[in-house]
Amino acid sequence: MAGYSRKNKVPDANLLASSLPQSAISRRAAIAAMGAAAFSNAGSLSFAASRQKKRNLLFIAIDDLNDWIGCLNGHPGVITPNLDRLAKRGVLFTSAHCAAPVCNPSRTALLYGKRPSSSGVYNNDQPHRRSPLLQDAVTLSMHFRENGYRVIGGGKIYHERYPDPQSWDEYYPSKTQTKPPDPQPEGKPLNGIPGTMAFDWGPIPNSEESMGDYKVADWAAAELGKVQAKPLFLACGIWKPHLPWYIPQKYFDMYPLDKITLPLVKDDDLDDVPPIGKQMAITKARDHERVLKYKQWESGVRSYLAAITFADAQVGRVLDALEHGPNAATTDIVLWSDHGWHLGEKLHWRKFTLWERSTRNVLMICAPGLTKPGSRCDRTVSLLDIYPTVTELSGLSPREGLEGRSLLPLLKNPSARWDHAAVTTYLRGNHAVRDAHSRYIRYHDGTEELYNRDRDPNEWTNIADRPEEQDRKRKLAMSLPKSDAADVPRDRTTEEGDSA
Ligand SMILES: [Ca+2]
Image (cartoon, rainbow, N blue to C red; front, side, top):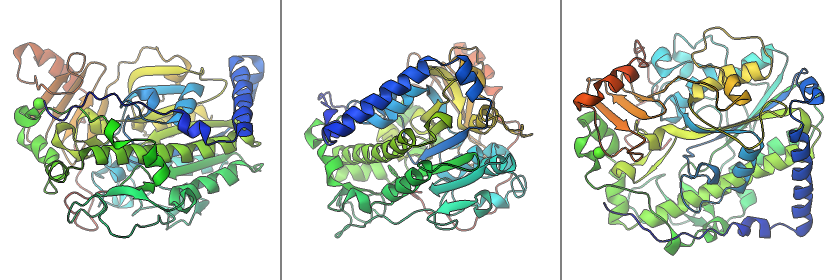
């Protein structure tokens, strides 16, 4: 085993709070108390009645955020007070998995409610409207519009190359440019890795206000502060912690380099992984090898943490605006990230694999009057489930042909029976099936991996060949897609190690 540091990382959780003026703290505390009082009446007649009317939906996406947030306990010392407080207000799903460990197919699956193996959208270079299944399909926001909503968005909701203007009434900054630019530092690469492109990180002297995500959060905050004539579907897409991690200095100051904990990595971890899995882990970019060569592991982890806390702060600004505005009592919130992220685990960086580190993501849903504050749901769910869930949650007409399942039973009772597995697909014909206890991977050539997650949470020991595990494997294999749709035509060649 290498690279595991037992240094205690001491989080300075007071850093964020202490930067706020005292009046802001007490105001927030007062609002939190009011909110808690209101939520404690969940199920009362007044709340039940308030859910009869059409409610607004605040739909927040975060790019490339794995489970390194405080309430998911994915990494020691990470500072995410705003995500943690949102989780405390509703249901936190602790085993939510993406339909694909890549931006475009993950978001496409979520926003159309269709699996990659049905749509043929498997990678970042496949325009979703070129899929025969999706070309005329009604996306999630279009479905809300058909049900009388004003549907607006800002920042990254669809993959940036394919923003789908028809899905929105209005978009910030525009229907074709979904991101205000970020400041670019002098002297790139900051991490000193030659030819590293966007795989770069370091503090920048620019203000928080100069960041694209700050502007997107400002836009969302302004909309949430207005009285709305129609029910509102507002999508707010935060780009960080997507690469590059050029983040204002103050977020780096929260994570002293000598207190960084590295992820657990086993040097010979790939020895029992089939060739296709190895290829996914060790790409031509050879990230992990280069990170080690240039002594950037701690620095990379620190930069990802800084980017997460920056993203968390922007989410906090949106939540504050909602809480202080006229829509607080009538708005449900769904927050998700599009997939996980490796920082050295399985000798890999980025996403693009079928292991837990790539497939587990953030999902929380807050629906006052329905969800009980402080709930955690450990059932295995998929981001595919979001479309049918919010459709039912918001009382819309049902949409036929969705391939996920409504999570309403789990929102009402997080311990409700749930025997479903989550399937993640990476490139055509490669799938992972995750249930409560196991992960089963089958690649397109029939090679396999199986992990007992109860005994082996790091997925280090592939037990697919063990005779006593064949029943478990067969049961998991029943959740595999029955067919793999042909690839949607590409609009370019994806570069190896594409960071998108
Ligand atoms: Ca292994």
